[in-house]
Image (cartoon, rainbow, N blue to C red; front, side, top):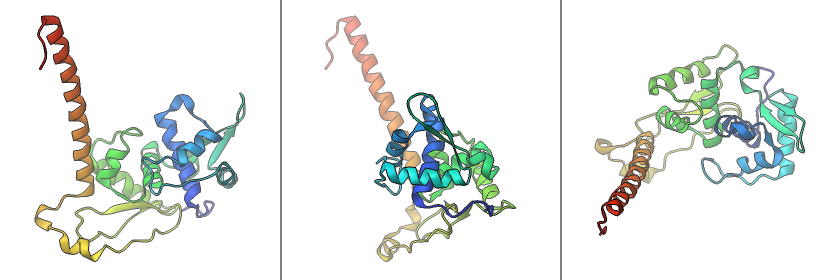
Length: 225
């Protein structure tokens, strides 16, 4: 990592992650007000770990990040707004920012999980593309920004973690889980996430079909069962 970038706290990486996420998902509301930023940091979904930060704590994190040019502050209107400056400071492309964002918001993930979770920030063509950008982030001349973690027992894929808060602590696998793992039918977390996404899509399509069938019944004067 660049010598000008300090080791960031969990809240500081959460603030950066939220700003980068909301820039892509709610561009009309970006840059964010302090209130919106606090809400994004304290989200119960798509966050790991879930935290409860106060406005004062988020403001301190913003002040620390501003000192290293990682955020930009804009005035105007009735509230000060904040944006991130990650790409300029770290000299990385938007694809890499998307990956870092998900790692900051959701913790260590496999390349497959990252591809799914980054969908709204950047659509990677395939897992190989994700792995290519992860490799670039890990092998930067200025210092790696991500690291590939040792494979956990019972897992088919390695997870990746960001290094903005220093070297991650690798949790030991629970012995009971290791004993219960059936390697012949093993499914990765990334594959499970993909299956869940497909189930959600199919449920939505089924609901749409039901609405369409009800409409046809009404037009034909047929009572639906």
